[in-house]
Length: 104
Image (tube, rainbow, N blue to C red; front, side, top):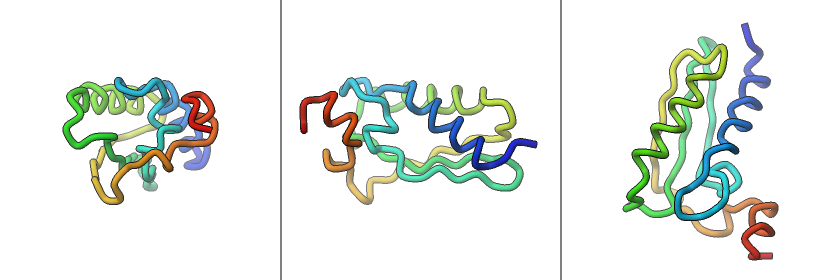
């Protein structure tokens, strides 16, 4: 069975391949992933937000996240919780992504 820390690293690497359709930055560096938890049965729960509550591409992005995380060997189930508190803002973007966007 996989180590939860190794699995978390793999999940983060996968999340870095998924891009917000409105901002050319991956969703992990964008700061919309608030928490990744993995239980002892390797069920993954991702708590995240959206850059906008009315994001028209939210369903497609959630489907992509779900499919890519489930495809990681060892992952049992995936649950994605969308929250709007705290509200996302540009300060949550990683420094690397801020550089990419010209915000630094």
